[in-house]
Length: 322
Image (tube, rainbow, N blue to C red; front, side, top):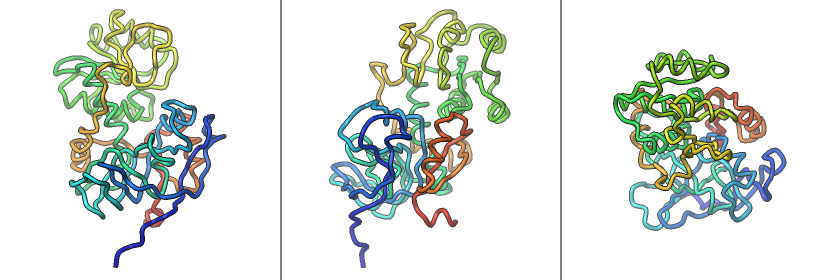
């Protein structure tokens, strides 16, 4: 006997643009069908990202209503035309189509635009923490052209993109310096990075650790006003600095991951790093989990920038009892 096709679900959506606390609401919406080359999953967990509240503000505008939640894991519930590499019931993780549907990952069901199987040995919670951090870190390091033997400063080693990028850079044979607070400083040192603090004197501290100007800088911290110092660190060459979020409104010449001419999503890297995570050789730390009803508390903590790891909303009620 097959399960009936779901017709409605709970989802977190916004119907107008504005501050997330003002526009988001948990409501009942129709369940969308997957399109060509898409799948639908019954969501197990969804991780939060700064991008969620930026979408609420109207970044990448589209047809309303829209949803939030760009990192999900779950089980395949329906398969769109052209999909041949998964079956109903398979465990997968990936990125929802957040532009084409009225809901995204914080929902009981989500249509995925990109996905990979969850390898044996990797928990669905851990898998949900991976997509955006892995994709952004891989793309940024590739655009920078990081190679073996180079020295890179990762400003924001305690952000989840930064934490992922530190591990990736070390795997490439680079010398890594990371700025971080005390929460992640010891873990970053254990990985093999040299770590220093933010704030006054950062330029001198970083150059002292490097012995000269680092070759490259990846800026992942949500720290306004720091770009001039990052440029100083690399001898005044802004093209050696890549930011994932600061769009260089001052016109300093710093590169931005999403605005590079050859910047394309690197979802192809998700499977490789999921396998490494299953083997205990790569991780994106999970800080806390929340029920769907506690979405506002989760987003309030996410918005502070002091979550100290990924925040996950558990959609599957059974998961909350496990």
